[in-house]
Image (cartoon, rainbow, N blue to C red; front, side, top):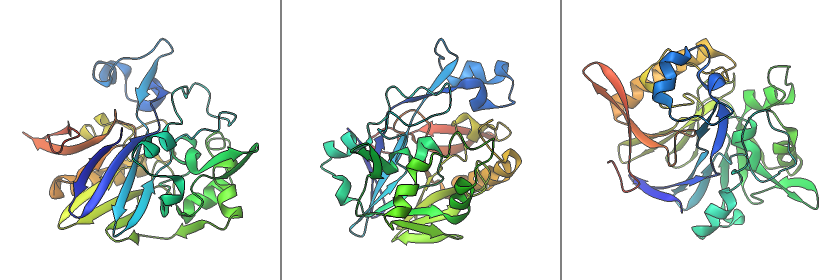
Length: 288
């Protein structure tokens, strides 16, 4: 079952597309293994770390906004070598348990178009990919869309055209430039670094702030230790500057954070204790 919580007048539902396994060395990039391994959690026999695929449904002024779609269910789709996808593809079943059908979703937000964030944009019907959420407008950062159309040797393995071209063919894509409020209290904000066109999503209601981080930090440890950056970041030093700004705002506003790759449900706050940042996971019931 999904995890519901509230942020002011916004209703939030965290739903999982299932756990995914990433190569742990790639996750933590150039950070020495001796530093991250004691803190990161258990690894499997292939040296992979189990991570979340935490998608977010927001009920805002009668609209249903889905942030991220996970890996999806197109088992024939390509994926980067070594990523463990065996337990992914659960999003639609999790939504159905909450009584939400694909046609109920009004807006889908892609923070970026990597396979593990946008794979559920489409599903297979008679062997071809079609939009999963047929009534929704799919909001995508313009710079990200353009990058995905021209992948290079570094990026082409994670930009899978079957995840986004059918949306364009169906006329469902809305390209976003700069900050944009896409529903009351739901705002897309540029957060470059993981990719040049990467965005995060801010949620604001009744003075409360929530931030869906996207890939600003692939692991909560990277919020505590700002210099720790992932090898998956295309522009790591740009992401460093983005992350510092997000951390400052999160601390100042005591923001509710939703971390896509943290253990489910990925809800937490960043605290400052004796000059050190600490990630505080929140219980499903609230602030914990």
